[in-house]
Length: 324
Length: 291
Image 1: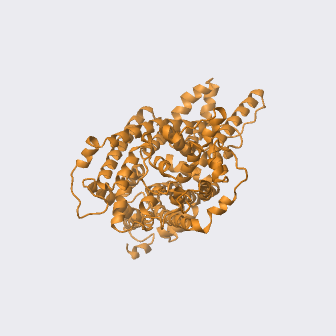
Image 2: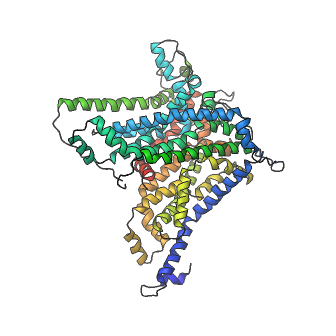
Image 3: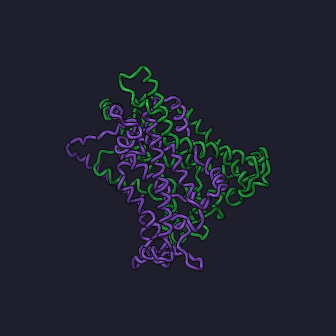
C-alpha cells in the first residue's frame, strides 16, 4: 500500500476511487490474514494429509515403514469390519431416538416459556442451566443418578419396589445416553425455539383469534408453519451433532477409573457409536490410516444427509416470511 | 431481531384466568424441579461420606454434612491448583487470541463488501460453519505430533491465531448493524480502517465480545477430548483430573470428594453464565438464525 495515496484530497484526481478501492482491498486482506493462514494450515493441509493418510497403514509413529494401500482401507470397512457397520447402525438408532426427543422437548419448553406470565426470566435461566454444565461434570452427575447401587433413580424405585437394582447405564444404555444428551442440550434448543416463537407477530395471532380460530388451530396453522425455518436450523445442527457423538458413552464407560484419560474402556454395545469405534481404532490400536478412512466415510454420509435435509426443506420450510 | 416486548394486557381476573395461571405456574415449577433434580443430587452427594454414598439401601441425605470434602478438594497433595491453572491458561489464551483474530475477520467481512474476492471467501466461511469438526481433528493431530507439538500448549495458541469461522460469523453479524456514516465520518477525519476497528467498532461490541468470551472459555474449560489426545498427566487440565477422580495411593477413588471437586469445577462457568446471560442467550440466537 502506498502511503502517498492516503493524503489525496477531495479535489485530488480522478484516480481517487480506484486507489481507494485498492487501499481497501489491501486492508481487507490484511484483516483476514490470520483466518486465511488458519484456513490453509488448519483446514486445507490437514484435509489433504488426512486423505493421504487414509490410503496408507500409518500407525502414528513410523513414517519409514508406511505402506501405500490404495483404497483398501475403504474396502475393508465394508467387507472386513463388522464393528464399523454395527456402530453405524447404532449411530442411526441413536440419532433417530435423540433428535425427535430433543427437538420436541426443546419446543415444548419454549412454548411453556412463551406464555404471558411473570418471572419468565427466572425459569428460562433454570431451564438453560444444564447446558452450562461441562461434559465431565455432566457424566459424573448422571453416573450418580443412574448408578445401579448408589443411583438416585434406583433409590426412588426402591421406595415403591424394594430391591430394585437396575443397571441403567448397561441395560438401557441407549435410552440413558438419550436422557443425558437431551438434558444437556435442551437449553440450546429451547432458546433458539423461544426466539423463533417471540418473532411471530402478535397481530397475526390476534387476527386469527378474532376470526374464531381455537388454540389448536392457531398452533397448527400459524405457529408451526412460521416456525419451520427455526425447526430446520435446529434439525441440521442436531443431525450433525448426533453423528459426532462419542464422548458421552466413552466417558460413561471410563470415568472415575484410573485410566479415564483414554479409550481403553469399551462402552456397552448399544452405545458403541461410529465415533467411538473410530477413536478406538486410532488411539487404542494406532490404526491412523484405517481410522481416517472411517472418518471420511462417516463425513460423506453426514454431508449427504445434510444435503438431503436441505433439498427437502423446500417442501416443508416456510420461506415467504419477511426478512428478519 | 424481532424480539418484541409483549405488552402486559390488563384483564379482569376471571376464575378461568386464575385456573390458567395456576396451571401455567404449576407446569413451570414442575419442569424446573425435574430439570434441576440431577444438579441437586450432585450437591447433596458431594457432602456425603463415601460410606454413605455406597450404603444399600440408599441414604438420601448425609447424617452430617461433610463440608470437609470441599477442603479436601483443595488439599495440596491433589494439586488441583496446578490443573486449574493449566485449564485457565489454555482457555484464556485460546479465547483471547481467537477473539482478536476472529473479530478482525468479522470486521473485514462486514465492512468491506465491495472488495474483490470477498464473496468467494465469505462462502468458504459459511461452508466451514457446517463442516463437522471431526474431519480435521485427527489429521491436525497427526501434523502437530510430527511437528513435536503434542504435550505442549502450542496447538491451542495456533487454533486461536487461526481464527474461527464461527466467531467470524458472529462478529460479522453484529458489525453489520453499525451505521455506515460512523465509518465514513471517521475516514474523513483521517482514521485508517484499523483505528476504526479498534476505536469505534470494538468498544461498541461488548455484547458479542462477552458472548464470544464465555463460549470460547467454556468450550476449552469443559473440553475433555483434546486434552486427552494432546496432553499428558504432567500438563493436563482440570477436566481430566475430575474425570480420573481423586484417588488414594492404592488407586481407590474417593467418590464424594471427586463430586465436590466437580462442583468447584462447574462453578466458574455458572458464575460467568450469570454475569453474561443476557448477552449469551441473545448472541447465540442472532449468530445462528439471522443471515
